[in-house]
Image (spheres, rainbow, N blue to C red):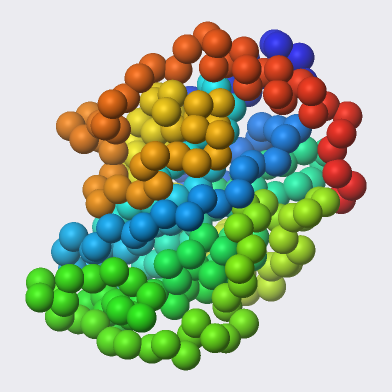
Length: 264
């Protein structure tokens, strides 16, 4: 990837993070990256802050300085009954592409990625809607049961095929998760609703802090998760702007991977 294309990709990534996405959910961000995203880091889930909040697991996004970590956080669904399907990186057409997450009545395909905390590769087992109330499976999800009473315990889901120990963060190609979507999962994505403004702000704010980038944290972000999404009034702690050196380091790393893409 040339310096021009890298800069254009970084700019486009920033714009896509800042601008609301039109429904239905977009299939992917049309930016091809030559290098695979890092492994999913191990981190602790903060307790659910209040009833009806849903867990959005952390993920690697692409920005001005390369890959950066978007911490896991608790978010409100845009409507009762909707569930979050995480986004995922997938190999195709000679590069890695980001398939955006979305809201729908069912959890669709997210690449078979083990994001943890109920998103073990297929579906979601950390809780579910019962009428207008979201009930939390405390065998999976951290909940303060003194404050939140709509809970249950189901340990059997941990031992089913939902779970795998891989921390690989992308689908397809060499070394990626080889899961494929069902037709029902394809349909769920096609009719999904995009991330809320709160979620988009969280991603955008993460990308403005150099400490979230792999050029700084080497795949081990300090803030793996936060209780509340980042916003103008809730910025990352010790936030520092992305530097030209960060951008150059990311460019050199990405350029060195050109022509070394894994087979599909």
